[in-house]
Image (cartoon, rainbow, N blue to C red; front, side, top):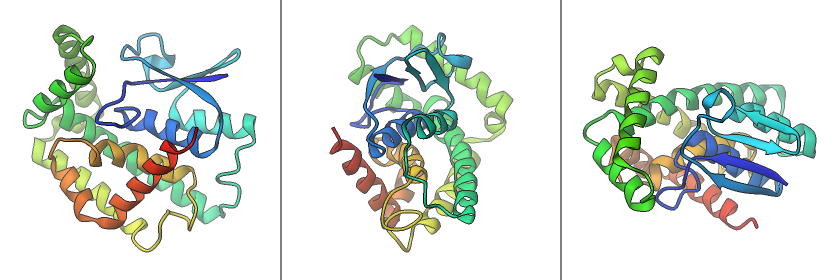
Length: 232
């Protein structure tokens, strides 16, 4: 059976990282059977990044590559009816989520207003995590932010970037339940992966305040959350 390796859960969300939760939701919506193994150390993962999957002799990393692999191997039809224009929209949304990821990560690991709450939540739900291990993870992320670019922003400027990303997502799904109609597709799993890691967290960031204030975005998150929870 296919095995998904991703970060541990937090605040009732199956993965505290948007990319891992995106893959989790996709597999659930596609009804592909899998085992879910939670790990914190990504040193043995492809490119030292989570999530990744092991499927027989195949090991696949990168969330988008995983979705393509599973779609082709298991005949997943979630996106089969999408038009070229809709697939272009999916690409643009995926890139927006990539941008939002860095703001979310920055707010957790670097922003002093929210780091203590994130650290304490991790330690509370995963007592095997040590202070030393968390500080090493924090230092590692600080290096990533510097080279990626978000680390050069002041906290409020970084947050403003994330709010602009969320506003684009809110506009996209404001008139219907899902991005492309009445049933979810893979891009809905992607949006859920990131928005759930904001909406369900007991950490009152401006990002969470935005999602709570935009009912269509919050409802989309709740709907996918309920759907993946109800799939065995």
